[in-house]
Length: 109
Image 1 (cartoon, rainbow, N blue to C red):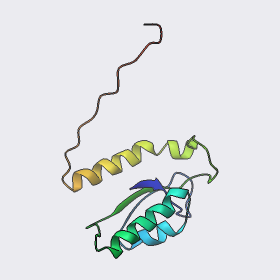
Image 2 (spheres, rainbow, N blue to C red):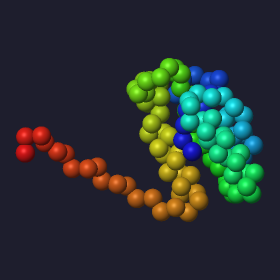
Image 3 (spheres, rainbow, N blue to C red):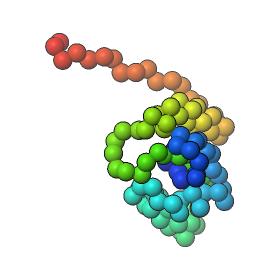
Image 4 (cartoon, one colour):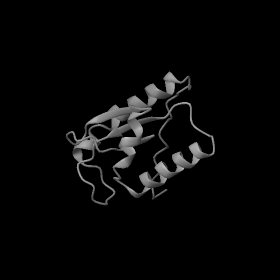
């Protein structure tokens, strides 16, 4: 998972949480989808469908206000978080290849 997480640290602080570290991270609700994620994981466990491992790559947000823009502090960590996610994927044996950006489109063509 990749998400904002309350760490009590400065905005932009990145964290990797696994195993027993996750329930407390999901208790602090920074967004509406976290409640659903915690419920989904609980329901899966009740059904006997647990994941062998769950990893959260998170970042401390600057603000909890609704909006679509990242703060400067969080935006500076996007590449760091991307690297952490790629490292996790490679660690579990996933083959990772860069994707070419889509071609530039011009409206006047």
